[in-house]
Amino acid sequence: MPLVVRGLLNVVVQLTVLFVALIGTAASVSGSWMWPRGIELIVTYGALVSAATVMLAWWAPKSLEARLTPPFSAAQPTQDFWATVAILVTLLVSVVFVPIDVFAWHLLPPPVPWVASIGGWVALVGFALIIWVIFVNQFAILNVEDQSSSGQNVVDVGPYAFVRHPMYLSALIMQAGAGVWLGSTASLIMLGPVFAALSLRVAIEERVLLDTLPGYAAYCETRRFRILPGVW
Figure 1 (tube, rainbow, N blue to C red):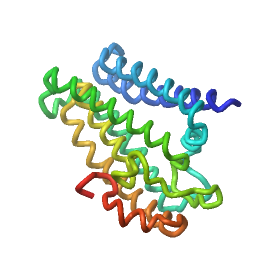
Figure 2: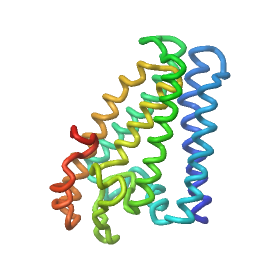
Figure 3: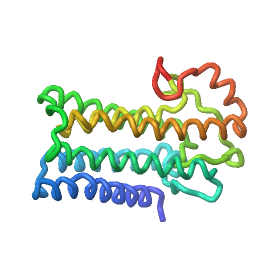
Figure 4: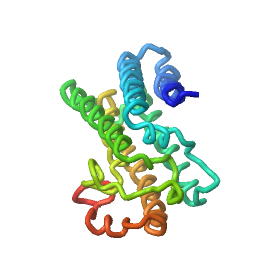
């Protein structure tokens, strides 16, 4: 099957999961499937990720191939298996949290329109950063494993010039912006559990990279921060 077709099928799976988690939850809480903001987010995300998939298939096919690998594999350390589960669960919960808060909990006052608009732009920046990360790193697979047999090398350009794990930073930025744009200020609370799960993955990933990737120790010395620039 052509790479671009596999990529677009992956997009369909992503959109299906997002629709069920976001719109399905909203419908179960509010009694209506008509949530304009939620639908607009899914349509926008679908258009952007489809365009990015076609672009990557043309300009960076190895990078797209890496992102299409399953999140679990036989070569994956057991600790990373559970870290991956934690990441997927916290991300899913963070998505479900938003419509429940918008339509039922109202834990915090909703953002005023101009703040919500800023949230939308922040989400777009996070998405763009994710695509940038994928573009420059053809070894950015969804799990942690020894890729030395595939010729993995240290990537220190692009977003990797600023933090060692820019994919995780990008995901947090997109999550923060999307939740606020959808109308849930309290959704920012969910950044905590997601960050904790990602931090667990970072600890496991860096142990593997230090053991298997020549030059990674030197890279860590010159790039001090893992996810948050100037913080950690």
